[in-house]
Amino acid sequence: MNVKPAISAPERVVLDGRYVGLEPFEPGHAPDLFAVSTMEGGAERYRYLPREAPASLADMEERIVAANMGPDRYVAVIDKATGRVVGQQAWMRIRPEHGSVEIGAIYWGLPMARSRLSTEAFFLFAQHAFDALGYRRLEWKCNTRNEPSAAAARRFGFRHEGVFRNDMIVKGESRDTAWFSILDSEWPDLRAEYERWLDPANFDGAGQQKTKLQTR
Image (cartoon, rainbow, N blue to C red; front, side):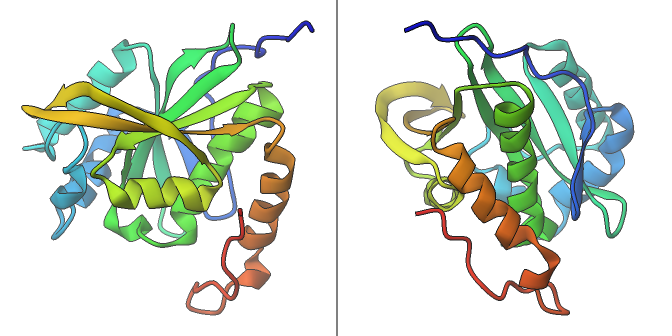
């Protein structure tokens, strides 16, 4: 059976949703991202990322420049209600020849925590990968000790595939890496559930969900 590769690697495009917009990383995003990274409790969300929270605005600007020089495709997550950057994420392990790509380098700041912002930020990536670019596989990876990340993967509809033991050394610590994936055959049902959940009718005046996301 012949299998077609994906159309291309993700390009530097804007992805626009109801609640968030995803914009290609630019140094102009640094002030907001630095502010959200260093607000009270913000630095703690860097616990399982390769680097600690940025030490200065210049540090944040340098990280954005460096990210854009690498093979990954980073985006800033914009809260459309405020116009401010509230997080970042990236296309990683981009392999269009195999139809496989990863969502990673995720830093969703506290304003995104447990909200429709993070859910839609993920949905826009998944929708673009499967529907626009024709990918067969979307990956999610995390430190096995990072239970919030693993829980997020399961909530989003990823299936756990296994653990790579002693996979990496991060911040001087050994990391076992949990692998998760969504396949293109699973996406249509997941997409329908995301569209249902993200509908404004599913939220009250305070932005709280009326029904949970049902991906299982």
